[in-house]
Image (tube, rainbow, N blue to C red; front, top):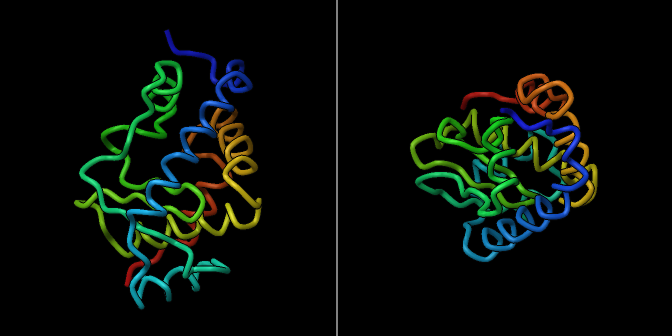
Length: 152
């Protein structure tokens, strides 16, 4: 039966933040800086420090190993086979097959949201609360990111 994300969110947050921070640190050291056009895209959607962004193209997005966290990520649609991008602070993971200007502009808008809130630890509780309350598609941060998508 589906888990009640809202009820278990307080329990999940510490491990969610730790996992996200570890992924972000990995991309920060192994990812690539944005291209000239990428910097322009980031600037257009409001990112204040686009030079800090690192991008890593992957075959598929990483999945937490911790069972409850993994289950929550799959059930909420945050991570899974249909997801094309994941932004954690200044670190962006993009599935190789989905590497488009539209997706990059969407993920860069999430970077802007992280900048606004100040950190992964400050962003995730708000973001996950939105998803737990109204669902992924209706989460305010997702609506905002979709509103800032553009193609070329």
